[in-house]
Image 1 (spheres, rainbow, N blue to C red):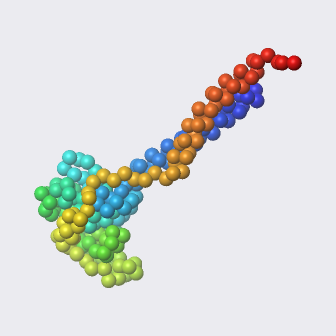
Image 2 (cartoon, rainbow, N blue to C red):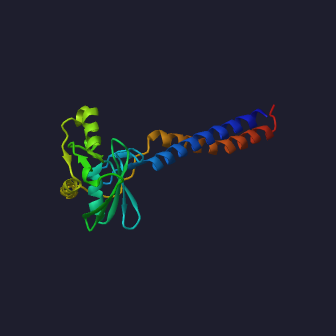
Image 3 (cartoon, helix red, strand yellow):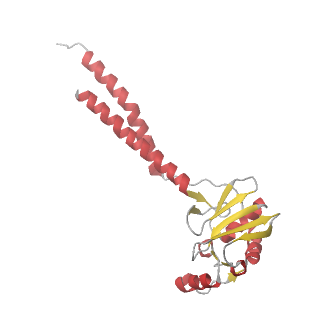
Length: 208
């Protein structure tokens, strides 16, 4: 009975480790991506993250509006799905033949701007003058960040496209996840082996 308990514990702990490791890795894969332009890891639901849908229906990810244009220009015909950094309103920019085609936005499209801060983490999409002002006043790094129109931002993206290798970049899985999965597999494999060894020991004739 004691042997059976040991085997059961090995199996249960192994399953916990294996399921935990696989679940954590799967969750990271579903919620995290790498920018196809610069390689920065992003959370897919973050307000700054842009989802780029190419003409074949495939989804791609970008970390900021400028990288969004880089990725969109790479695929030539694409829909760049972003959000206003201040109010979270959806702003969808459509490119056709690498040219700005039209914009889907519930507000006045003329006031859509891209704050270009010189690095990806400071590039932000805003849907109105009020939202731009709110960002300038709320973040110290954004105080003097220049505002660009979508066409101007597209040109910046076009200039960067030549210097970047655009394409799918796999996310990194923490080593701990592999440790959990590996430990779980080892414990599960050890459970039946331990059971067999214990049975053999119990069946062996006693020696004087």
